[in-house]
Length: 595
Ligand code: ADP
Ligand code: MG
Ligand code: ZN
Image 1 (spheres, helix red, strand yellow):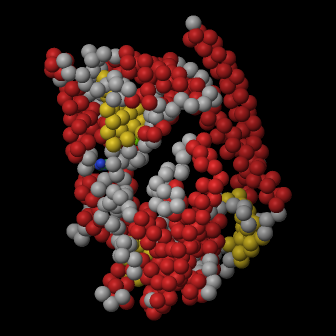
Image 2 (cartoon, protein in one colour):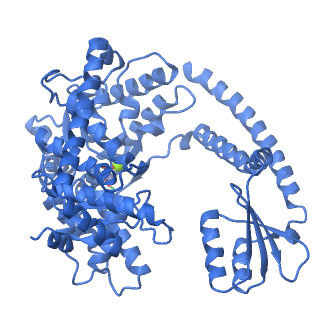
């Protein structure tokens, strides 16, 4: 009954959407036609522009700040042409190099006329907006489309095996019995054993949850049906629940099999408010619970679900007979990282000198996906550098690229800024050298990378589960060492410390409100996970939190300044070495410290 009404609603919607799309196509065609007018004569493709510039055919280039359209005047032509430049900054640099190479190109940069720019921006965005709207519409239509295609789960046998999953030995051991069950269910049934219906995998993105779920299916040689929780959440009410129903219908047909629901928090989050989206979620969640309760042990279906936000899940999901088994997938430890690096370097051409052990040591906290990405970046860098095979340097560069961004050699930096950066980074490095809990310096540089003007890299710690208060306090000192270095040497401070300040404030705040590390407030969780919890303690406590955070930061800043005052000679020597060489590595650094 309910379904019939829904079908009607869908049909009406279909007609409306079709009309909207037809109108949009009309508008789009009109806009495109208008843009097309004598386009060939007056516009110049970007690649052609580059070519012309190299052939010294260009006389003048005029650009308006903030616009990607430039006017180009050729030497042998009267009329100006226009060209679209994908990246103006890079383009200006390119023109400048061409000029430096001896090409006579006049580059004019005009300030923008606001009104005109706004108008042209809107106009130039119009086609894109229409395309995007069209796209979204089409997508939604497909979701509504023929019955068979209501959802697009992937279903196939996977070739992934446990051997493809590095580390995670205990977790694999726990999951072996599920593989056994899928292979020989009758054995378990005869014995009267109850096998879990659902297993929840907790873990950060990229830790290998999908991978291990696939490996279970691969080991048992059963189909792997997967869907993501966010796919269940739809614009039109009721669809989520019917998708769940269809998913399990299919699973029953394919049994024995694995059903994998990624991002289950999207449907299974706690039922709190009554907003539309929430009710929709509830229907979907309820349907999932009904389905899981509905199949018995005769049906050999194991539901695996993954989330990185276990605290968000509705408790109903965790009851016996549902997801009664939970497995945490941790970020890999040193041994795990090494194994992951080994697995992912199998199909790569690595040079003899690559030291995967030391790469593993340098990447504490990285997930499997990040490590795989680093090896891939390393291969790209090696190709760019025209190496025969991937060298250790290439991978180290990849690690830095992933952690701090790409080196920007071309950026022009004033001497003043360079000095400021040198003292800032030297400040971090020198201060942390005198802090017992902080890890040794690995590299200091004043070559800009990503958004940072310079950086100090530390050797990574052995994997740790707990961080002490002393360590956190010293971390604050190390973070504020940059600002202290600027202040001491230049008697001025800069915006360069903003990220340090942000991180330091966050740490200090956590120390006070999350880890209960102050005497005056004590071990209370003052962070609050729900809105009302934040107000639990009133303004007086709020003021106190602010005071304590400020005290921690102030103390750390004073310590940093004291340390630098005391070791001023070291600060000067590191900063000077940086100004001279731009980069100071571990051994050069230790030499200055006489180790
Ligand atoms: P999640 O589902 O937890 O977000 P994935 O399983 O999608 O993570 O992992 C993404 C990719 O990272 C995998 O395809 C694999 O290449 C790599 N990866 C992650 N963890 C591991 C691991 N333990 N062993 C080998 N590769 C891994
Ligand atoms: Mg995944
Ligand atoms: Zn800094």
